[in-house]
Image (tube, rainbow, N blue to C red):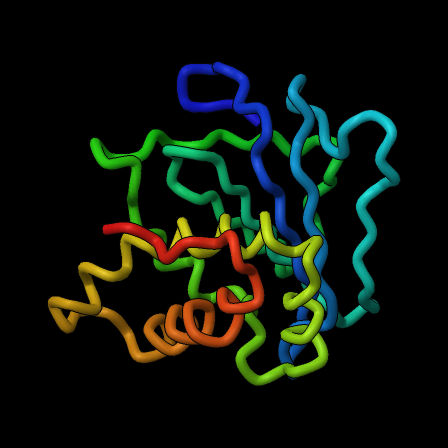
Length: 172
């Protein structure tokens, strides 16, 4: 993980989901190590369930950076060669990335995956998505957000965040 100036971005959260024409199949995530390695030393390799008909989407989150979203619809990217360049955020550190709402997360219509998000070990992932969705609030207030974006944001705020007592509402 590095920013546009080739500086390492430690502690980034890397999220991956597999999906097919019916929706999400599986998801996983990991926090990059301090030396920007993924997964960090001592952690098992990242695994994701799928089949020959599933595709992969990846999101990378880092404080003050615009989330990076990658869709590997053809299954042609070699994870060993991936290099992520994260754009700097705005003056407030917040830039809405509309590609974020194209991810299946937070699994509004898939209760089996949504229920996994309620586990305590998912709080860092939920916080990363809440922070990434926060810039959408201005578009919602100006009535410029898409219905699907608003639906996912509301679901995150009202159905998932309450499971985590230490998770605050995103600030403007």
